[in-house]
Length: 382
Length: 151
Ligand SMILES: [Zn+2]
Image (cartoon, rainbow over all chains, first blue to last red; front, side, top):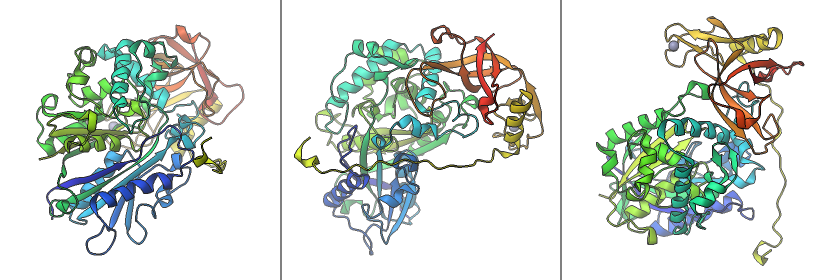
C-alpha cells in the first residue's frame, strides 16, 4: 500500500465565457493530450492508467450520465471510469483514495463544464433545490447567495466597499493569468456603480459565465518520478455537507467549511492556518464569499473579514493569485482550477504570478447552494 | 465571423421532461393542509426540541421518526433574511424586481423561503412582520400559499 500521492501534471484550456464553437469533447481532449505529452503516460496494460476519475454535471451538460459523453476523450474506453458530480477538489480526493488504497498506482482526473450551453445557468441551479418547497418559489444559487451575503455582512462588518476591493484585486490577479476570462482591470469605484442584481449582490460581484476543462495526473510515491521531477504532494483533505433546506442552515456560520478545514488540517498536521500557507485558492464565486470562506478556513480571524481586507490580508496571504472564480471558473471545475494554480505555484511555474519559495498551499472547492458542501485540500512540494 | 468558425452548426435543444414527484406522506399532508385548510404545519422533533418547516419524516440530527408530531404554525412570521431579485428567469415565480425572503413563522424554529409582496422592495427590512396570503385557485404546490405581505 502506498503512503503518499502526488499530482504529477496539470493541464487547462483557456477558460472562456462562450465556447460555442467547441463541443465539451473538444474542450476535454486537449487537456488529456497535454497530460500524455507532458508525462508520457499511457492507458491500459501493466503500467498505464487503468481508472479515470471524471467530474461533470448532468444538468449543465443537458444529458444524464454526463461522463458517457466524454469517456473516449479521457481514455476510459476499455478501462475503469468513475464520475464525481461535485466540485473538482472532490474528484482529486477520489483519485487520492484510489492511490492510497493501493487499487491504482496512477490515475487521471478530468473535469469539464460548459455553463454557456444553457439559456440561463440560474435555471440549472434552480434544479438543485427540492421540487416541492424551494423550486417553485424560484430559489437558485444566485438568490440564495444573496441571502447568505446579507447574513454574513451583518455579522462580519463587511461593506459594499470591501466587496468592491475584493473584485478589484481578483481582477488584478486575473490580468496576469492567461487562462482567466475576466482579465480587464476594474476599479473599486466601477464595481460600486455596477447594477444591483440581487441585493446586496452587484453584477460585478458575480463570477462570469464560464466554460472550461482541466486534467491532472496523480500517482503514488513509487511511480510519480516516472512522470515528473516536481511532484506536488496531497497531504490533507477534508469535506463536510451542511443541511439541505436553506432555512435549516445558519447561512453566516461557515459550519461545513470549518468542519472540512478541521479534517484537512488534522490530516496534514496544520496547526496554525493563518501562518502556515504560502498561498490559498479559495472558491469564491461571489465577492462576499472570499472573506467569508477565508474566515471559515481560519486564514483570517472570525468576524474579522472586513478589517482583514482593509489591512491587505488578501495580498499578504496570497489569496487567489490566479484571480480565482471572479476571473472566471466554471462550476464543477472551479476548485480544480484553484488546485491547478496551487500546483503551478508549488512547482515554480506560475509565470508572472509566481510566489517565490511557495511550499505549502491550500485549495478549496464548494458544491451546492451558498456553500452547502465544502472540500479543503492541502498541497505541498516537499 | 472569423474563417475558423465558418460552417459551425449549433443545434437547438431543450430538456422538457414531464415528471411526477411523490411528495411523501409527510409532504402530502403538509401540501393538502395548505390547499384545503389554508393551514401551515410543521413537525417537531421532541428529542432535539426543534420544529421544522418544511416538514420531514425523520430528524436529520437524531434520526427519530417525527412524522406524527404535527404542530400548527401561525400564518404570520418575521422576515429573517431577504433579497430583491432584479434579474429575469423562466424559473422565477414573478417578474423582477420581487422579494424572496426567509420567513420564520410563529411556532417554527426553521424559516421557510417565500415571496413577499404588497410592499416596495426598497422598504423591506429584516425583522418585519408578514402574514400569509393563500391563493384563490389551488395550484397543488407550495404556491397554494401564494405569498406573504406585511402585517
Ligand atoms: Zn432530532
